[in-house]
Length: 225
Image (cartoon, rainbow, N blue to C red; front, side, top):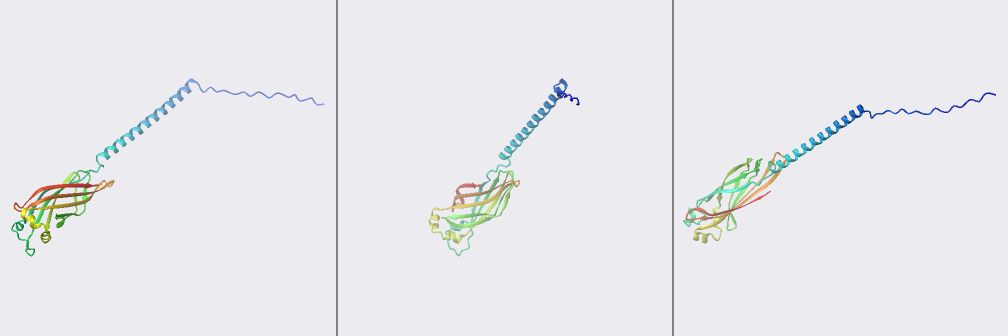
């Protein structure tokens, strides 16, 4: 009978414990983490600073360069030529009489870009009726400049003589009239900001027939953006 084979117990497992927390390794890891942490802080700080600079630049540009200001229109001078025939009382429509109103209008552009406007119109009213018209050619008011416009209105004498109150006004020596001007244009800032603007000016005045002059000139202006 064969001898029973002796059963040996399994050898117990032995685990090798490596101490990674030695002084040199731990110090190097801490230094690496510290460097990475410092770089992250610097990177975040730089990004924040850049964003602040961009935000400030946008605010400055929005309130200065890219801020569209209202162009303005102003009546500088106005004269009337040919009132002598009214003073003489010559109201015959068949007689060739010339009556001309000459005015100087200025368009001021306070923006950093030019104000380009289309052909404009000026109308002369007497007792609510149009008795004269003129066209203002399209133009360009340069950045931060004032453009002077000379406007000549040829009065339609035949229409003036058709107004019923003309005779009574000739007795008083004054003809109350109004001149209305409209200019429509656009401010274009670097093709980024585009703003349309309509300038309107309504001026009332009196033609002094004896002095052949303008009196009581009063203008109202309106700007629509």
